[in-house]
Amino acid sequence: MLHVSQHPLIQSELTRLRCRDCPGPEFRQRVRRIASLMVPDLTRDMPSSPSPCETPLEWTAGVKLDRPIVLAPILRAGIGFLDGFLDLLPDASIAHIGLARNEKTLLPEPYYFKAPPDLDRKEVVVLDPMLATGGSLVEALRTLQNAGATHLRIACLVAAPEGVAAVEDHFPEVPIFTAALDRCLNEKGYILPGLGDAGDRLFGT
Ligand code: PRP
Ligand code: URA
Image (cartoon, rainbow, N blue to C red; front, side, top):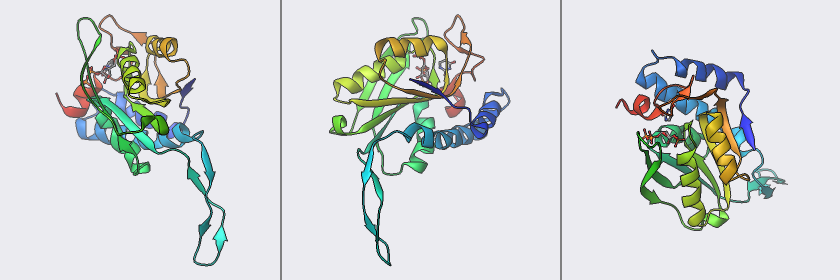
């Protein structure tokens, strides 16, 4: 269920993003661009149905998605990832999931959750640029499932093998789309080679 992007546009954007000298405004812009570039793969297998439409000249066959899309960014860094998805999915509604990773235990501490209604009838895409230990994404998926979500998928920028394994242990049916699969975590739970702290780089903290 792991999809690692091979697209050269995504890979070249990501290369610049990883550089320590990439300044905040450029970092934000490139995260947004990668998010948009990920949308076609992320949505490729979403179910759709025939939907005829009338052109100015005649009726023709068309297509519509079966389920509305909900984008579910994990705060804060997921917010920096959101706009690029919204650029291509402007009709999506948003579920906000507030989680902060405790710097000592590396466990996620929930602080906020607000989601649109009828999640069971929607495609829910959880957004988090960084999949490190996987604690945050596992907690987010649990929260969304408890709120009724059944059609779930994950989009991230950089994933560590440890985090992918944790998500697959708890949610083997949830596909993970990532721009890169990196080598490992360091002793502080940072992804190597990674790109540093995504939230800090996005928001200048
Ligand atoms: C970072 C990142 C992920 C999480 C990943 O967030 O944005 O949400 O860590 O780590 P994990 O896979 O080990 O759980 P952080 O909690 O630092 O908050 P921030 O987005 O507010 O910076
Ligand atoms: N969160 C980040 O922002 N970066 C990492 O490398 C790990 C968790």
